[in-house]
Amino acid sequence: MINQPKMILADEPTGNLDSDTTEQIYDLLREINKKFKTTFIIITHDRHIAEKADRIVEIKDGRINLDITK
Image (cartoon, rainbow, N blue to C red; front, side, top):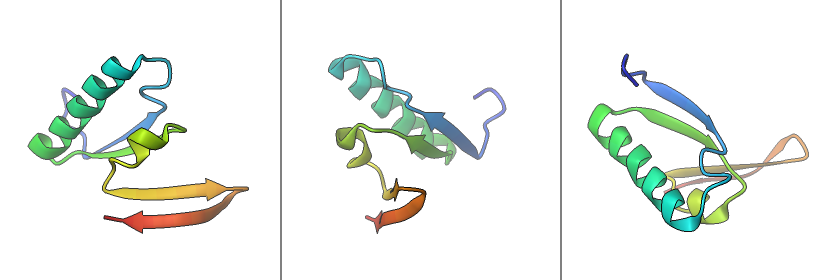
């Protein structure tokens, strides 16, 4: 974060967290996104987190199964 990267790849950033901490982390990522214009690519199995994203790309069996932009 120190170098203000344009893009961050986050693999299950909330995978082992309780629901309150998950919300705090998501809010922090969103704040960084807005303040520094950082793009986050978040890989997650948590549908609740995915539904908050600006874009959802679902991959199934190695192929794009769903691509939704809000």
